[in-house]
Image (cartoon, rainbow over all chains, first blue to last red):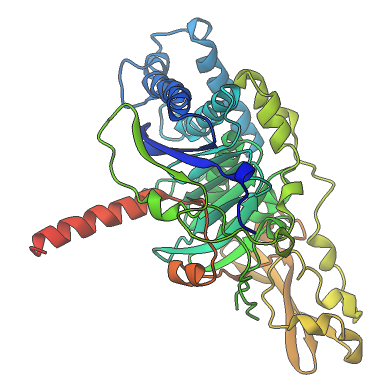
Length: 264
Length: 220
């Protein structure tokens, strides 16, 4: 069906290098370009503040000062204290498989990215741009719709095949996070063994909050073969994991989000 | 079984071609493009009825997005405990070793199956009686495992794992299946465009960088 006049929307795409990745904003609106730019710029400033505050690579960051004991928890910013609490509860909730302290020092980047993108998305909504997506290096936050009455279409990269995909999702909001051992080498450790988790090559989690989807995907990767049993119990979050042999598992609700693609 | 890609599904604004990553050199507000949504692909919107109903599935996504103004109160995993006693759809399949046809194709409607059962057999399963066999409990690296198969007309129609020690002792079916490999060209040929890719992008970035340096090295 051809687009009618009322349905036509412009896609405003912006990109920002921040938090060690590239963040892409795709705002769908009929509003004037400068208004979109203002809203996106505010979101970009927010992410830059987050980067300055939570970067483990910047010795002067709040997270580094807190980790070195130079800053008491009660003297931290509200956001910092929230992130610390979130890391504690996620560690508990994931049976220790999400562990911000795994590397010996506090590294909350596994939740900070999703959390800050979730808030950037709400900033865009607050500015009147409900229909947008934010892609933070393959972790995607979706809001509204790309066009009238349409869901967003999200392809999931195949972990073993360059330039191929292993699922295509149709979503009317929420988020998609994929964690993979192929992402930065074997960067996900099983906190219980201290060794790289290798039983899975990728985990994709779909759900309302990118904060949690991202953390769950990271935890699932560390769980390895135990991941399906844990993921299947999550309420509101659907998932897909792929092993090194190219075989996968999906949660019961995942297929309902996917375009049927078959598979031998 | 390979189902045909739904040819009419998904032509939402084909921005993917415009989203090729390039390193942004720190520009404060780097706008990449402004295009009419859908124009890039040149496709028209598909009938939404051909696609499973994703709108209903992330149930709290819209309310979360709308209501959440303070992140400090929105993300509290401890308030959303795992429903350990409910909603384990796949597990019910496994306890059965009967020959009822309904148990032989338990979850094909929700989960891609490992089996090669054509979907048509689900409705004609009563013609042939299926029988299940359970294998020995075997120790392996992650614990112990026990595999069951369902055979019908001399064909294995289902493989399940009623016991897997690695799964925390819970009876958990591993709906393992061959993950489809969807090449870009194949998707494009089926008019399956997408708005964004979820995945670890660093591989492709690293690949692109490596490729670029190799090309330079080769003087190309």
